[in-house]
Amino acid sequence: MRYVLRSSQGRGFAGQVFRLGRANGRRPVLATRSIAFATGHDAPGSFTTLSASSTDLQTILKITRLTPYLVPPRWLFLKIDTDEGISGWGEPIVEGRAHTVLTAVEELSDYLIGQDPLQIEQHWQAMYRGSFYRGGPVLMSAIAGVDQALWDIKGKYHDAPIHQLMGGKVRDRIRIYAWVGGETPEEIAKSAQNAIASGFSATKMVITGALQIVDSIAKVETAAAKVAGIRAAVGSDLDIAVDFHGRIHRPMAPVLIKAIEPYSPLFIEEPVLPEHLEFMADLRRNTHIPIATGERLFSRYDFKRLLTLGAADIVQPDLSHAGGITECKKIASMAEAWDVALAPHCPLGPIALAASLQVDATAHNAFIQEQSQGIAYNQSNDLTDYLVDPEVMHFEDGYIDIPDGPGLGIEINEEYVRQRAVQGHRWRNPLWHHDDGSIAEW
Ligand SMILES: [Mg+2]
Image (cartoon, rainbow, N blue to C red):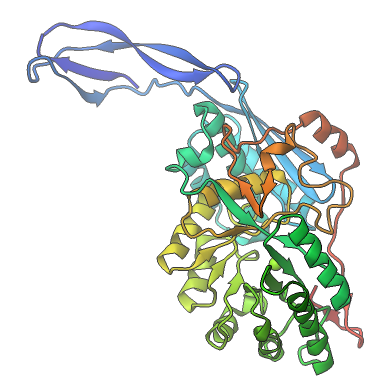
């Protein structure tokens, strides 16, 4: 693009435009481009940009390659390279459908190769609106992983954390919760005491197995006894969120909610499946416990329906499922307008968590962050195994710091990622059956 300037001095001259570039993802360098100036007759001593008279602006960065890595325990990492040596990482994944999302990312590469990675909003719109069929877990997770990697590149290019590029952070750290588990009330109470000993002040737990559409009160009482067991063991020292996991159908959900209300859970998650947001709104109107949902909603448009129905007090978009940083920041702002809280879903890997923390940093309504350290799925590899410096995900007093390094604020150990990608994975969620042989919700 050629800029034509005018000066009242009536002198024409040639100049250069200086743009900050980056040679290796770390240190700024000056890139120069010759530009011609013409003279004009504005106020004395002033220079005014009048017009852009040609279209010869060269893109400084170009996307050159997308490299997926399928790694244990059940994750998919994506590395996007550029011609300037800056690379970004994303985590495009739907748990149990990693290969399907990988194919969706591969299809997006037809558009992405050769593009300027800094034009994130434009690419987001192209990936979303450029496809006649859109939305849903697979396509939105593919976009999410690409979007995270583009933001990582942009941050490294500007030598700034992503939250700085989004307006700056409103908090230095955010509360996190640990998972507690066990079959008996005693085992669960012990698990909760361990969480407190590790510095956590909040936990989440799943309290039921499969429940049929209408089921026994004995199962409800067993579930409620688990929450009661924790309260008896730790009093009010621990906040306890309860995840129904979408396992409970409409007829049983109010029964289970009423059974655990006396133990004051922090929130109740997915009290019914997100397919039933209308019923979720009914449940919310009939309990004083905050209702949370959102890990199986994938765009602003899905969340628009949730918020319009008044179905939740807490939204839980997943940074790797709901269109990435670009879309989840917008979802957070929509929720803020309804005075609804934000608690991003994240039982995934370190890139997804780092992306979540960047949005948490800038969202006033964020109050707690999920994370997967020690979660049951993480047997072969855990949250920080793939990081060069695990300390950037430092937990203390039940909080995690917002990373302040450039981009996502984490550095991926690519050599180790390559090693583990040789093993890969084919993780699937379990398929459950009721006693009569019919399929159960997991
Ligand atoms: Mg959940």
